Length: 183
Image 1 (tube, rainbow, N blue to C red):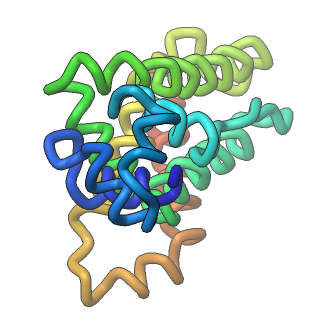
Image 2: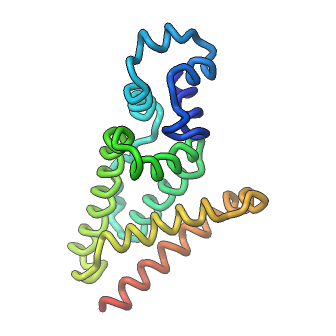
Image 3: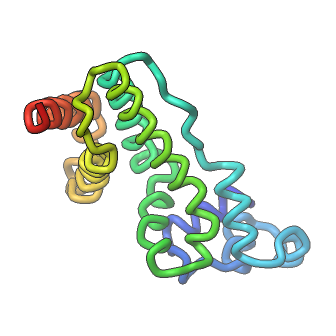
């Protein structure tokens, strides 16, 4: 049922998400759905908590390797089994308070993780003290999301095959730019 919930949400977003449709997708009775979840909010929150991949702490000891790991994880989030869910969440958190309520903890954890990576790098002297964690994360995460959503379907397989090249390039460009602009 949780997988069916995420699949429906990925296809239809919050506006098209309801327990009846999830029951049909999971091939279970509506009664079974309503006995377990009283609202669509509760169902999607449970599905995200149980099936969504939550990022573990990243601390390899170098800024480059940390950002490579974070950027790879972000790319996987937006292209993996629940990539459509990630894209729907990005849009729906801005439009629906219900969605923001259960998506915000994940988003906050990602921001905290990314900021910690940059702050550790500043403390180690790998980045200038004026390096802005928000700008660095915006460039990397925004670059990944833009790359995923703007790549036309005929080029998707090539994009996926060349993910390591893209990730390495974007991380190196951001690091080089940060160091040269702020040094």
